[in-house]
Length: 198
Figure 1 (cartoon, helix red, strand yellow):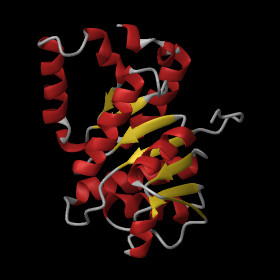
Figure 2: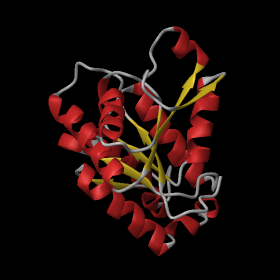
Figure 3: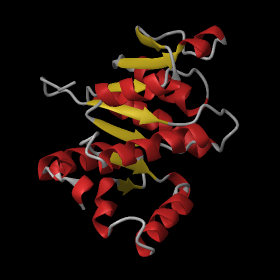
Figure 4: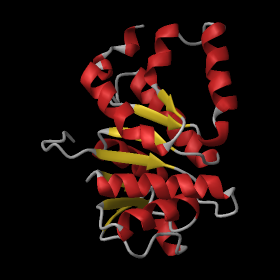
């Protein structure tokens, strides 16, 4: 789906766990505040707890716009955020991820567990294959993603990936840097690179 307005639609991947360090919750809230203030339309996994819940609560509190995308079985388990005006219900997890990517002009990863890491790595893979030609931003709060970034560097150093593939994502250290990183990437047209032929 092409964005025909100047409004950015940004997908956010993040944890549903509420037992994590408060710094991660604070970062999610901060990103939600920024999105609402900057009139960014948020797209997320529609969860009510953890970073997902904190992010959504912040967007809603400041009267921002947000769309949740969630599979039906999660609705049946009451895992969804109940205050969303826009909720898209999918049949499967695969459909959920594809729908979020389709709606988004960029993808942002906050810290999270297996689900978040899987979403991030999948969208990086899609970008490598020219299926998701949009910015991908990793928000490295408290150096959370350092082991993953080291693994990706190892993949490059051992030639499982090309050095050019480092451009598939950008790393920032705080929510404050997310929108400028996305806009800079869009302005440079780096998303037009054909990583599939590298």
